[in-house]
Length: 252
Image 1: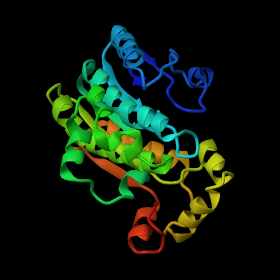
Image 2: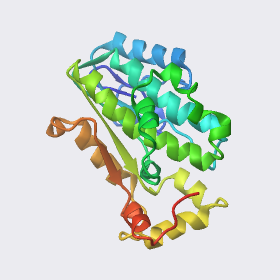
Image 3: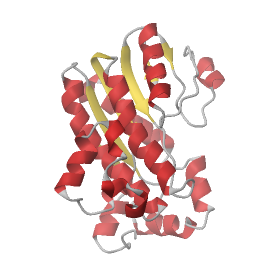
């Protein structure tokens, strides 16, 4: 979570607080579980106590190869909705929020209209009571992940209305395969061949560097993107295009 003007809450995976301090940031680290409203609320309140909360970045998430379906839904879907709600209370006028979602949110056809409306607008604490999110309705971790990332994109559209009433913006980015330790973990896992096939079928034929994603995030959070809110930016090297062209199978 980024809180400019007072401190930087280190929410960047793999970046120790000391590394940010060496780069002249004042850093306050706090252990946060986004699947716990109390935990997220405490973070939002602490950030607000330090000064105006200008930028919020939610990078929390678990991949299909890391957790069972219920945990993915708790972190990637419910947790993201909680972050939107809790930081809406404290975001400053002129502020901006960003959630790092995934290209997976673009992999499935549109859901029934009622389900899409619930994913966008239902209060976070009601989401997991919806029948289509019950364990029997979400068969595996990949299905949970795709559903969660679709929810992120829909939630951004809904949140842009309520955040807008505070004079703030909110968007999402949906990266593809990025050259990070997490991507290396996936490449070395049983689904590694799927990742390699995506890279080969994509127009870019490579992974992206983290810096390429950071540039896009910086733009969406900054003043040059002042007219952009409720949007999702797909940064995947063309993997979704290849999938829609029939060069890759759609996920089960």
